[in-house]
Image (tube, rainbow, N blue to C red; front, side, top):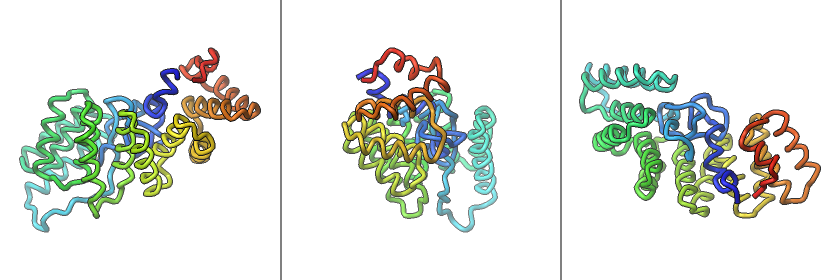
Length: 294
């Protein structure tokens, strides 16, 4: 199996993006989300990475339960944190970091401000600082699902999948979390990195059940079923993916290989033609030209 096909559910994430995983929100991309922010564009994350270490972070719908009276300092800290997450989503990391620092000057015990700092440092590839801030965020707000999801994704990207899966589970079980599809997707991507295909399948299916429009999970199900040899299921999920967004090089290459194995020469030629016309020079196009289907 060539490198792309072996890791299609991982490498393909660098281009496919979903709002839950990276800024722009188009397809199957990066991480499903590091919660309440978006730190990257189509650089990928869970997966993706699983994608690049510079991506991940969706904007979350979850609103933490806080005391009715938080005080002026907490109010200011929250405002700076929310503003910082918006800047981070826009890719302005320097301003996001400064908003996070200001939030912590206002309230040094505001867990979500440390979450912001962790995400920003993760985006910059500054792993020790990211870990320190995520740990502080978790100590202060251990039940916050975004913090659990974000830190879980960081750990998954750094070879600590066992603890990452525990944090994803913590995020999922929070009854106030409106977007469990994100930690489900990240758990699936993390399992894919460990070549645990059954756990990955279970989590991707749960992600799609929670949100039928989760294109990241849908694409990865297609790739996973292809790897398992369940070609008709792979075709089904990839068709669903293409029905909801424009095809990209990775999805066309996967389609070519599915149809090649199914023996449908007409469908294979159609997808191959699109790949040649629209994505000439890409790694997927080069593999097609070399006939390296597996």
